[in-house]
Length: 136
Image (cartoon, rainbow, N blue to C red):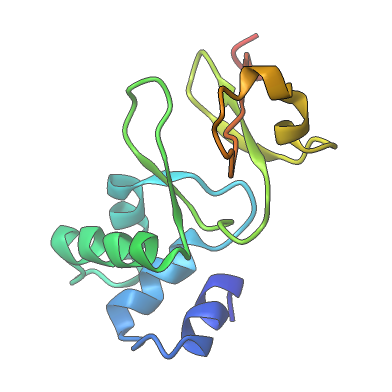
């Protein structure tokens, strides 16, 4: 059973055939699929699954905090099932490929106190950009 599916079952999420297929498609490291890509892959496993079901399921997974929505440079939203594993993203400026990276250190430590302007900072999002080997 996938890590995502196991977490969802542990939360009492009703697992229908359609939901199961969406969760299985999202499972794995470095998975950052668009909703259309999720639908295409899910339809290979369950041909009757509708695009609306995929979109609704993705929306539920994001609302539950089990999947993170990732947007980079105005491209289509992508869905990241590694919401429970702290990481940043490395994005190819050419093809848009996304990889999970886990740099050392806390990015909040890099923001000096005099640059916080009185904010109580609770999080930071860091995106690394470059060219993947195929685009370089």
